[in-house]
Image (cartoon, rainbow, N blue to C red; front, side, top):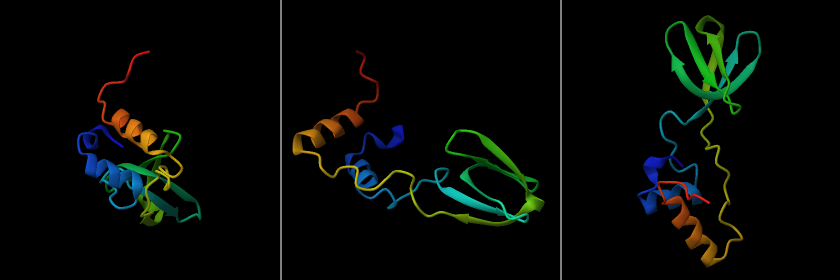
Length: 108
């Protein structure tokens, strides 16, 4: 969840209960197949007529020349796992959402 969603409880709940319901632009995971048979995946952080830049889950950027790309496909799924709320008590759920709505970290 990004900070922009934390002030809207309805949006936040939907994003957690069904992470695939809405995937914001810029947060869509894509798969790139190259002409030499490699498959790369990540978030597209830049693209022009020369290159596509993917950011992987490790935070590292990979630059792929446009002439080397065979196919680009959106994965269509959020990276946030489903079922995060399963097994939590009602009080744990209240505490969880209260914590998520805090815009500043709690200091120890």
